[in-house]
Image 1: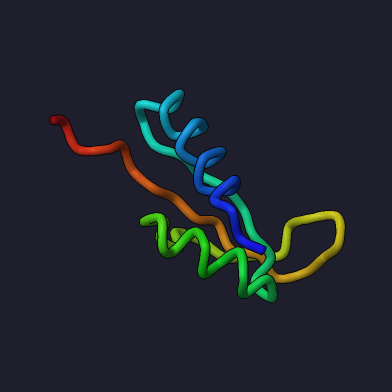
Image 2: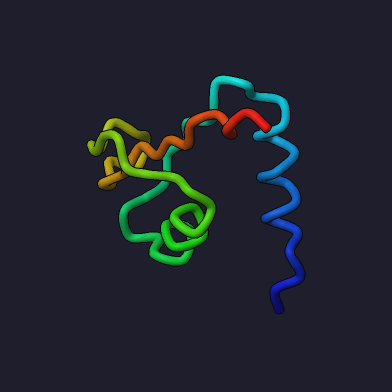
Length: 67
C-alpha cells in the first residue's frame, strides 16, 4: 500500500542537504534500489564493509538545480 510517505521523507531529507545526499543500500534490496533510482540517485560505489558482510551499494543524489 504505497502512500508516498517514503517520497515525502526523502524530500525532507534532501531539503536539509544543499550538497546532496549519500546513502547505503543492500544490493539485494531491489525495491529500495528502484525507489532511489526513481528519485535520481546513482550508484557511486559498491562493497561489503558492513556488519552483515553483505554486498551493498553507495548511492548519491546531487543538489537540486537552482530555480
